[in-house]
Image (cartoon, rainbow, N blue to C red; front, side, top):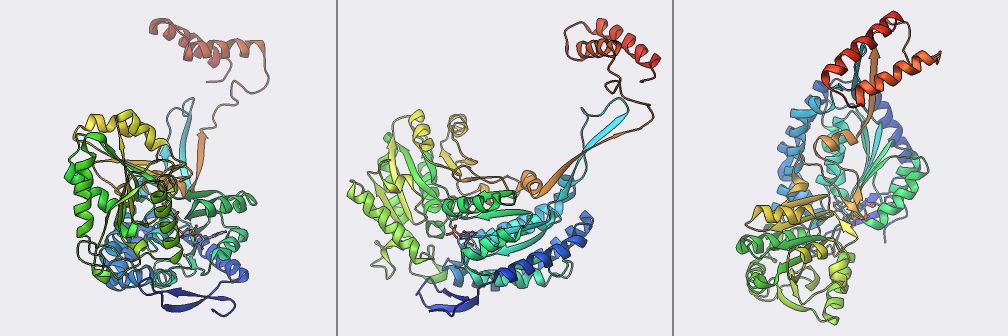
Length: 519
Ligand code: NAD
């Protein structure tokens, strides 16, 4: 038992306790918010080039510290080393570099032509929202804490980060890392540890925006709490991604892609392929290929293998329940990883498992499993594939596999998801210039790319008149002449008529305006 006011974290490979952490009290959370707000006052004024310099120095610190960071990520989550390097560290570096190169062109003054005219100019400008409360999950504890944090900073904000209580070592490493960047004002980023109640205190303390990544159930709670202060929020929630293999796909690539997309990070990936739909005529061959790939996965080689253990015991319970429910309803286990190379010492729920004979009456095809199960279902034609894929409460990500890119594109365009790829998987979330996010129960709002950076800013529209005219035509007094002139103006701008007629109408209208001193 942990002492009151503290919590433990555990090594996922053996369940042993690693460390004890203090739970941030509501007072500590409020202090963190105040401290970030103070530092924000100077940070918000820094020109783009100074923000870029700080980001560059953060990037270099991450690179210098990568081996240690990878080690901490692996110990906190149980994931394998390559996964930590390429899915936690790499996308963070890639996004920082993207902001270094594009910050000013995305957030700089953006002139708007159609609102200008009659001696005025107009533009859009972006300004920071204030302090962003970032509430993060454990599955990619570095990337999913750092990317929203760095995005908030790039847009000129402060941050209070609440890492997941399941991966607090990574939270501490982030705290240390950001603290070492001398170009960032002290206190601009604050880290508060603890379970969900600390997240609740953070929302109650009144940040200016919330960026949440996690489950649908928690997302709903957060949205309710955020409504108290009308705090704007972005919700990045769960997924049940469809992976559609058409009969003309490169089956070798599709099978290898499915094994990667279903089992990477032991399936604990929001954009994991959780429903595999394969066209009837090629399903048998596809299952054979997938079985071979799955049997080859190295599951007993610690951090140097392909697939690690599940991070959290609750995950194993959910996976067991989904497998049992599917088997009870007639599904079959086609393959389990490790079975080719002898019995694994790992818990059966953490071993990649291929299921066939599944349908939409089963939890494994409707609820987020967040574990290493690949259920495969056959479909007859493209329209049935689209119907099955869209038959879900979720809408995060999907992929379509075909040699005919036009056909694949047509299927992809009918999918109700925030992100889709053709002949590739799990890609969009790692792309710095593609906005990422979901529809339906997968959440709303986007991050990454220009759209994402702007979402961490407020938008201000500005119009400026030279001020030389004494008044505007639509101001008081509202006379019959003004009414008539405005009628003509509307006809001129929006009505039918030849260019020649309009030119003469415009000329006479301008003269009338001039006579009345309105030009
Ligand atoms: P979770 O919802 O249990 O926890 C996420 C975070 O919310 C943790 O830091 C937790 O302490 C905090 N929290 C819990 N209750 C809270 C409350 N009432 N108020 C405020 N904060 C609270 O999720 P998890 O188990 O850490 O992560 C797994 C889930 O995250 C999966 O559903 C997965 O699909 C989703 N996810 C989504 C994305 C995405 O980009 N869409 C990415 C990764 C993970």
